[in-house]
Length: 384
Image (cartoon, rainbow, N blue to C red; front, side, top):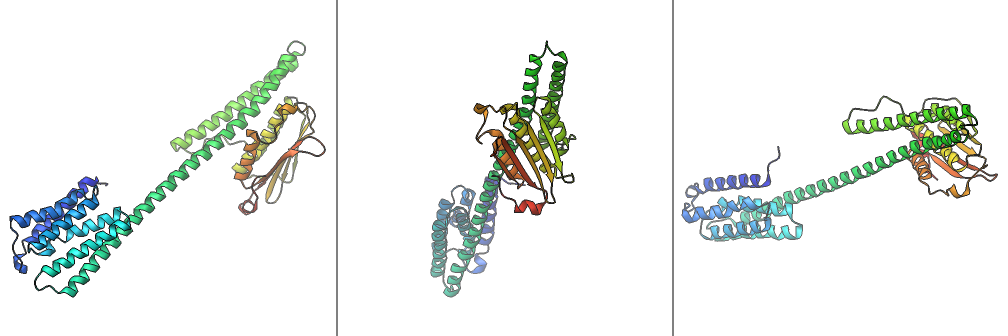
């Protein structure tokens, strides 16, 4: 249980004063003058200031040592008031830099030696040894305490910075998810709405099919948004992951059919033996294909597209190409769009590589390779 500094320092000051008074009552048995009113006043002046040691450590140290020096000069037993100066030196060392604390330790040694000089029968070799040893040990303890506090503060700053970075990364991930969900589904809805409006009177069946696609696409978009909200609530409340699974490569066929219904001729080709991959890897590949097809819908509505999925031993590769027909030049981005940035960030997050750019024979291609094992991920390059 944490104690307030003022309460703790007051308790320490009371303890020091009590110990000094009890020692002072033994002065006569040790061959020193008994404490009188002046002696008790000097004892209080040397120990009570410890109440303010945390607030004004240097001032308390100077006052305590001055009272101790006066006490020794008056002929009283020096040992009575040695504990408060020790505590003062420790406090200054723990709270102030070495250029301040080292002279304070020297001051304690000087008063200690002075006490030995003015005391009759004192063994000076012993006094000098104590004057060097005690301040040195106390200073070392204070220095270790100060370094420990500095390291703790540095660790706290690093933890706070790491937490801020994690929050920023999580916000970026959520922003990419929202971009992928909204951009893809809204593009399909926009294309289908335009088609339905165009053939509403001339071809009711086609208009009805377009409206059905709009209904299904909007429902799927809402479901994905609800899933994301459940994820966020679960993270805030600590209730675990939501029941609904994240979209993966098994749902590429649904995506292709949806885009195909928007007027884009899309061909899906799967090579290798399909297998279950890590959820994050599957989601990354799914979102990259989704963004690539969304760009075809927005920027090349008349183009034919092909989606290739190939399972390899340690990697999975997805490739989305279009033949460039129907491209709207004003809408084509050169690589600075949020969707393209999101693709690169996703690939980098999972240790994969991605290439985005025009083809020599015309058209555009997005090729993503993701490692499916930890060993392959460690050998992967960053996104290019």
